[in-house]
Image: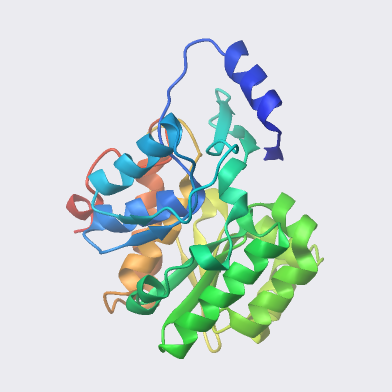
Length: 290
């Protein structure tokens, strides 16, 4: 993942041939996945009143996700990401954060946070000081109402950029951490996945860490559970795999499932999304979760 400015994003878009355009955004993909399982979800984010922003909001509402777009902002376009997928299903992301990076404390709807069983925060946005304050404010609201707080590390790029701040947030506020093995090792600056697992066990109550085709590991204070990946006939596009894994895990967690079953639902959702182009499920995940 590479951050780009608006002019670079426009240049890349004009250079594309045929392309698939759809709403995305890491945490937005996750809440859409939760809704696809039949769960209730809401999304707090920031878009501009432009074409992309209107489509983004429409697509959330269309799948039953409530949307709080934050205070209006002028002169900054809605964020977008141009993703190039190679024949081996790997993706390169060129991300212009746009209005989304301007999330701040007044954009946090405290009632929405207090109502949700789990607050899920996206590491991609943990960049500006205003956003960091918004994260901590939202986490504080959640904890005051006895809600769980979760964080996704999002990308090794984000971890390298914000390691100290991520560790501080993790130790102070986070109950459940999502990430992959590379991100977790980067967070603790170690080449040993085992050492990273032992480190994260000390810093938060639970972690769900994906390891690609090998599945995932669910880590708690007393257990380390391996959850296999589900077989996929053909992997087409890995965009959104981690986002949908988190969706399945969160749905299971908020519906009283065991940690192993939470991981299985995560694997199921990830398997569906990597079987086609795009970061959101094309079938109702509730129909697969049998």
